[in-house]
Image (cartoon, helix red, strand yellow):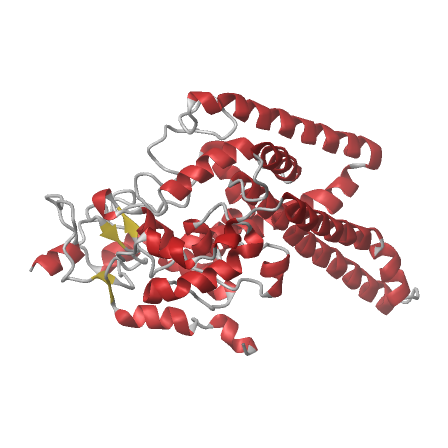
Amino acid sequence: MLWYQIFQDGPEYERRRAQGTFRPADIKLKDLHDAVPKHLFERSTLRSLLYIAKHLAITYAFYFFATRIDFMSTVIVPGTSPFALITRKLLHNFLWLMYWGWQGFAFAGIWCLGHEAGHDALSPYRIVNGVVGTILHTFVGTPYFAWRATHRTHHKGTNHMDRDETYLPPTRKDFKLPDGKVAVRMDYVEMLAETPAFTIFKLVVRQFLGFQLYLLHNRKGNSKYPPWTSHYLPSCLLFKPEQRWYIIYSNIALCAMTSILGVCVHQFGWTAVVKYYLMPWLFQHNWMVMFTYLQHSDPTIPYYRGNEWTFARGALATVDRPLFGWVGRELLHNISTDHVAHHFFASIPFYNLPQVTAAIKPVLGDYYNYDSTGVLRALWRSFTQCTFVDEEDEIVFFRNQYGQTTLELDCSYKPSGTLSANVSETSARCIL
């Protein structure tokens, strides 16, 4: 990829957009299952632990590098002249920024390994997955069992407007927009238009704080839950009664991690904890929100309601992306490159997912979604074009700030359910 292409839409996205219409898939799960070699379903505790050990070694290497930044800055730019002092300061700040970014990747990779444990994909032994997942997620500030409960619900209802758990799009009604059959461009501009600076501000807040706000009070979660629904409250409606003790265990683990950080502050000072842990932790959330958001939020990806949703259609409402190149493979453990396969076979270990992707692509055909668009372009495109959806239809696509969709439902397709009395603009056009 040439440097300027990172700001262009990928050819795969362009092909999907050029189709103009969408017809839901009718994929048989048995065909997919039969296409995957049986040995890829096997989980090796030893192999998984070796991957974890390797990742933790890389994480420590980044930390060791950070402890030498002051020394390296002095060695690389010696002297006491004004030019040397300014240059050394700039180099010093650049090296710290590099450490925060790369250690953020390492922390995100730790979270990804905990994600694997949440699907019992690290080991055939549930207790191993539980213990390892708790340790890994607690280190990066995630309540393991609480997150595991809602994440499994996400897999059971991916891109279902009533059942999914995260990144559910707002509807026309949420923005108090007029009916799509009578709304004009100015109606959308008046309600949705914002300055680029404010859009960037919202994006930065969402990237660095969005995940923790979701855990704290269900921000961007399913609106069927009451206000201030929280992953930290064992009694909230996110969890079944039999799960509540596990939520308490997660909270105890996080309290222990907070205590460890408190000891570090007492021993080494706030500055050290902020530089070595908290800043990478913030960058971890940036990378995490980036790849989790782009997995299912795209102008060409549908959301479903009612009988139109099936497990296969939900799994196919996923986009594989080569985010961050080899970094995504090595440090993020295929979390974005093989996410379609993961949604069909969540318990297959991450190290086998590339082979699973290769096996199921011929079965999926054109319904396999891949996008090589550069990450910054893809993020900006989804953040600015995936604004809201209609609340009437059973298959809906994101509308942008001007009320336009990238794809529309094929008019020859007849939904299995019954349309509501207030059909949307798209449905009305098909009916006519």
